[in-house]
Image (cartoon, rainbow over all chains, first blue to last red; front, side):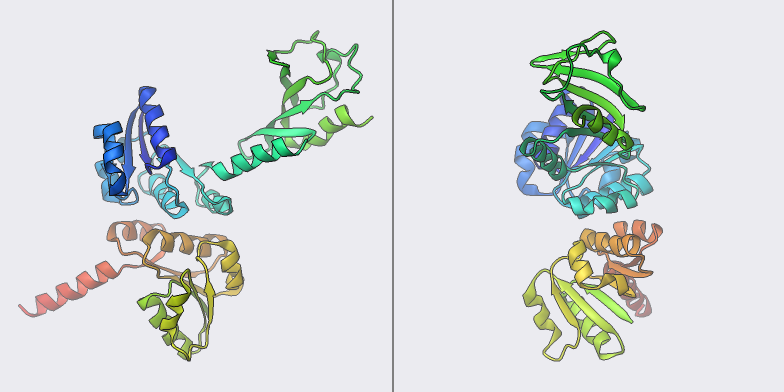
Length: 219
Length: 134
């Protein structure tokens, strides 16, 4: 697969390194000449110095045959312009944009940039989860967030003695995918017994979140 | 007519002063408060310190009720982004972005933004003068 990455900061650097290691053909475009020696040593011919928003440079980098374009700079305006060019002008099949300021996520979506990664949001969510004991922890929203993978811990006082997965009356549109018991991951079957402090990994439609909470936490 | 101008450089400041003398209600946004000096002491419009890609700053500039948005900072991409926000998020119909790079400018013209490209304009003007002097 041919991948073009714009932005050779920390994100772009490690991403390029990783993707090359996995056998992909990668071109990294970095604007700042200050970073040239360091990046050149690591990536050699895979490095282009110049403005990744420049359509001519993108063409020289071979954007017309690229399968994926990733805008990974630390500036939303640059990422937005790179993504838009990739999507609308060069019609790159897969375009991924890094969102720096969470405020700008809505604009990316509005401009048709569906694949976005927002580190601030991810880190904030993770810290929030660690800081506040939640009953249902959202792990991963899928697609537009109607479907989500969540984690629920079975409370201490949950009557589990005779409860097997089969007896657990999960709401509709919910699937128990795995349970984490201490260090072990158990792929559940109908006759798997549930124990207090098990962590359930559940794939659920978001409209069922309340049903899930009721099942475990409200008697 | 209410106009928001993002970028108080030479072009932004001169434009703001000219418009404010007419029947325009002008709000100027710039990150650097010193830039507003160029507006002169008699400037009747509003000034806001900040960036035109920040929702909160745009709301402070009352973008919901603006009729036109002009992005004339010295950064092509930030002009494009703020213009896109004004057009796509706030539905402003008259949106103009200054884009110095003719390549990017041409692409965004195709994508429906009104682009002011000083490089193309300057080239055309000089070209015409040179041709006439043949």
